[in-house]
Length: 167
Figure 1 (cartoon, rainbow, N blue to C red):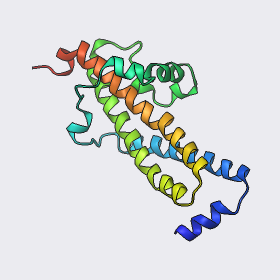
Figure 2 (tube, rainbow, N blue to C red; figure 1 turned 120 degrees about the horizontal axis):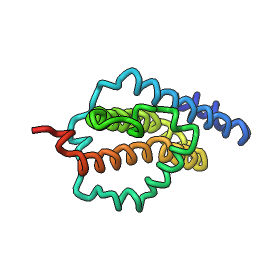
Figure 3 (cartoon, one colour; figure 1 turned 60 degrees about the horizontal axis):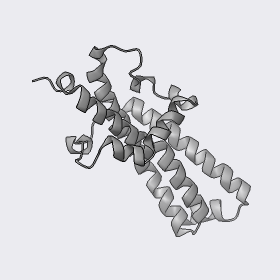
Figure 4 (cartoon, rainbow, N blue to C red; figure 1 turned 180 degrees about the vertical axis):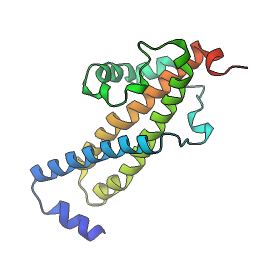
C-alpha cells in the first residue's frame, strides 16, 4: 500500500499534488456528509458529549469559535446542515436541536478519524506542506464545527436545562 502511495504522490509536480489534496478534502467533506445522513441515529457513549468543567463560552470565544460561526453563517456552508439552526423555530424544537448538535458533532469526529491515515502517509513520506494543508482543512471543517456544536449545546444546557432534561 505504501509503495502505491509513494508512486502516486512523490513523482508529480506541485500543482497536481495541490489538486489531489483538494480532491481528497472534497471527498472527505462529502464522506462526512453522507456518514452523517446514514449514521445519524448512532451515538458515541454519553461521556463523549458530556460537558467538561473547563468548557465555557469564554474558552470557545478565545479559541475563535465565534469567528468560525460568523464565517459559517455568512457563507455557502450554512446550507450544509439546516437542521442545526434554531432561528425561526419554537421552544419545542430546543430538545430536538440539542440532539442534532450531538449528531453533527459525532459525524465530524468520524470524519476526523477518516483523515488520520492520510496524516500518517504525508508525514512518513515527508510531504510536510500537504500534511499542514490537510491539518488546516481538518481543523476548519471538522474541529471547529465540533467545537461550535459543543458551544451551542453548552448554551442550551445553561439556558434551557428544564426543557432539555425534564424531571
